[in-house]
Length: 116
Image 1: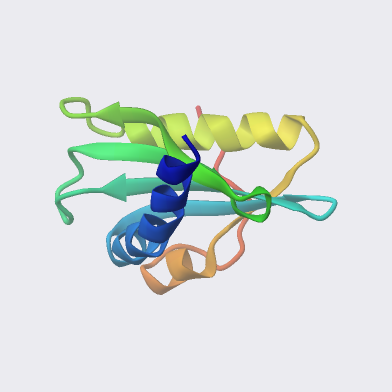
Image 2: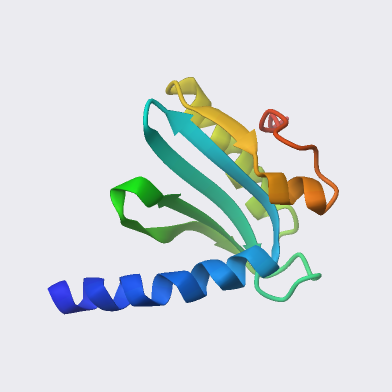
């Protein structure tokens, strides 16, 4: 079991390098000295489907995991990610849109969008 964890950490930089190239929505959340990342990833960008929502705890060395994915429903991942960010904020986390989001047209460090 320990060997598979080591393999996962070796693959992690490749995973994040791939994500930073093709993402549309991402947030960083802080509470005390802990950090959380929520990311919507599009495997075939610019297509909005398929998509996945990833959640990671980088300072706790927890490998990112997919919380939701969609192959057929547009805006599903965006909606689920925004709802999850709101839930994190209700638990006392302070979340901001990642600066890379601003480079792709989103607001720099704007509060997380509120689901309707």
